[in-house]
Length: 114
Length: 123
Image (cartoon, rainbow over the protein chains, first blue to last red):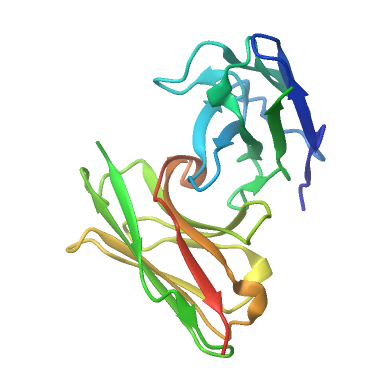
């Protein structure tokens, strides 16, 4: 089974500073036939459902602020919040959807304000 | 705007069957290009995919649930449902329904989610 890991478990960043979250898959999620990485990022605020931020590793969902960006390929991926805002406090999850139908999520990274 | 809403009992006795329904509004569940999935989140923990269903009835399940889980779809009501049998305290969680993109006839990422419903397995 594919295993998703995330680092760090939590981080605290000052307002306006950069936050970086890493996600690693135990197997590649790059489909070479279409050169797409089957990796998504979600944001979950307390008491709310997850919200899709990024898919295909780097495509921002409609309406998501451009301070959120995704990068990486193969097994290593990064979610970057370029300038942290108060409303970005949340838990962030990565998810692979290459080795389907078993879509699997990472354990989550909690982002707080320093 | 597509909306999903979970409904069902919030309390289920151990060994009994958990039954939830997701009602989709603002769009048709029969539209091609999407699966409809169930995901759960135990209190204070991460997300776990349970299974996904296509409007035609194609289903995929997380093997962790072995034969306990059954998904069904009712296109006339624009609803899909989850049944999880022989529940234990470990099945206590917030259960979410969500829309999943389909590609190559497989479920992919999830773009619309319901608000979730807490189901507690307790006597």
